[in-house]
Amino acid sequence: MKTYRIGQGYDIHRLAENRKLVLAGVEIPFEKGLEGHSDADVVAHAVIDSLLGAAALPDIGIQFPDTDPVFKNADSMKLMEKVKEKIRQKGFSIGNVDVTIIAELPRLAPYIKEMKSNIARALEIAPENVSVKATTNEKLGAIGKGEGMAALAVSLLYK
Image: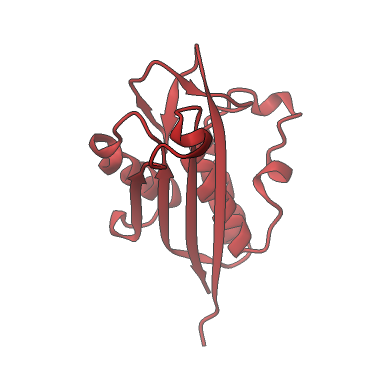
């Protein structure tokens, strides 16, 4: 009998001047980027936390603390690959990942296919097992005012 585990992840970062905007490893042309210790990739961070949660492992802040200079400007897709290995060591396989990005601007539709591909490659799963969607916050709250971006993710593990 298979064992299934579901995990959820959430991440939010403030938009800042003089930063690159990186989502799921895709550099997106925009006048601001996300502020953070690493590359502040909210998509990768949400996926990482969903995977860690499903495996009942400590969260991203424990795994890759922002107090550790090793992770300064870290490529979050590389961190995702490390998490994939931790999950495999626990005997789990990744079934699927579903992500929702919440941002007013920029328009993200042209980058979704590449984001899906990057996540699938990092996790070594088929692209059809990765869903990435983008929505706005309908101009409500800090995200709606264009002050930041967030991402939600759900992952399914099995063994």
